[in-house]
Image 1 (cartoon, rainbow, N blue to C red):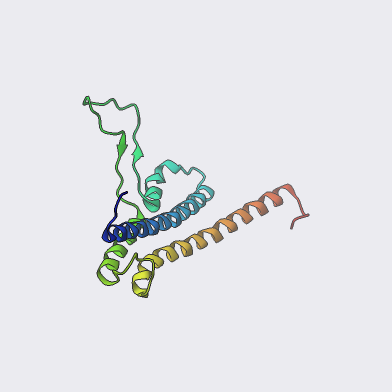
Image 2: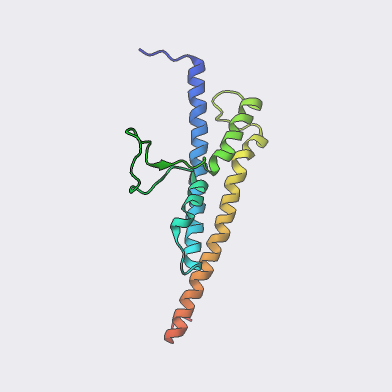
Length: 161
């Protein structure tokens, strides 16, 4: 049987909490990236998603982007065919949350949030992403309604007006 010390169990539990907060932040970041992508797709006629991909990746979680496979390797042991991108937006608030949590509220598995100021480090960026996404959603709906109305007027369809 494998024995796990209490310190190892608490450290593993805290790591799981930090990873959970990172995944929640990445989830909201990707939701925002998808909303912005759809908005740009509707607004710009000649929109290329490839140009904005690095920004969307940073907003989500930051990950390596595949490089063109046509580049031949120079050494016998080539590095992976990836270009590293810095960590994404969730890292910018999860890492400070972990540090502040460790310094000021370092009890148990970090499952309780007794100090509201520490919890706002996580909540504030997520709420901002939700607020921006709501504004983007309203703009998308307005664009779609305007396009449907313009299409109906051009066809002379008066049933839906």
